[in-house]
Image 1 (cartoon, rainbow, N blue to C red):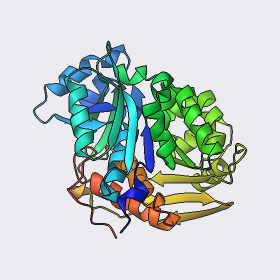
Image 2 (cartoon, rainbow, N blue to C red):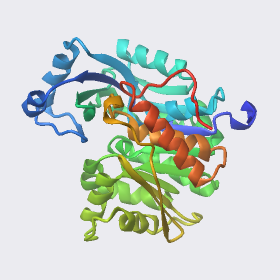
Image 3 (cartoon, rainbow, N blue to C red):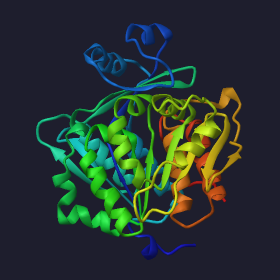
Length: 345
């Protein structure tokens, strides 16, 4: 077993901390708010009444979320080594913010939140139909993160301590300058920097910000839909996920970077890993449909499981296995939640 001192603060995440407001809805609800299953979008004015409507449902649940925060919580749970993970993002000074702090502390993650005086804590509507989810994020305070917070000595210390830093693509909409600072630090100090494509809209509408940081990325995660959109906006003229993963892994690297590994999940289909000009696929753990509760957090959990092994310098194969294990646990529960201890070996 690894000793905790070697792993103190080994993994850092930065992102948009959101409180998930999760409820089972129906197709009429999806149509009313013009939302699609298996998609993630930012809220527009037409979506705002939805949060109160969800909150009034008998089956509503409040769960600390936000893609990166989910991944970091899952990695911490899988590692079972106190103090091995940390996280930064922006919350409001309100009851949802307090809830978030309590939740992340209980998960054993060291969180240094920037607390915005004016904006409320961000929320994410999780609309579940038949186990599939649609996410609509109202960033609010999460959108107010500033690189000034990152540069404060007590916060930059988390960056210095971490050997691995993971940031979901969603943070590109909030603080690309913070991402750049951390990415450059990783390159200069021979550390591992990981990102996620995160959503089709990031690949389409935040392409420039994504392009700027990609050369620094050692590991890039995504799912098949995101990978296909990523390819489409670049005019690659292929929908073959293995080909796309390979091309992503071979995009230019910043100086000091050795190689990039692309890891693309495909729901129940095998995980695709492109590395050193070769593609490997790894089967996932199949789950009978009746055991599926909801897919919210499945991709985040996959990354969390993967990271938990990577930071222990385990093989890619072991990392993918742990990712599949974590995702399998999460989809059998509501939201990105997990039992007290993992049962992974």
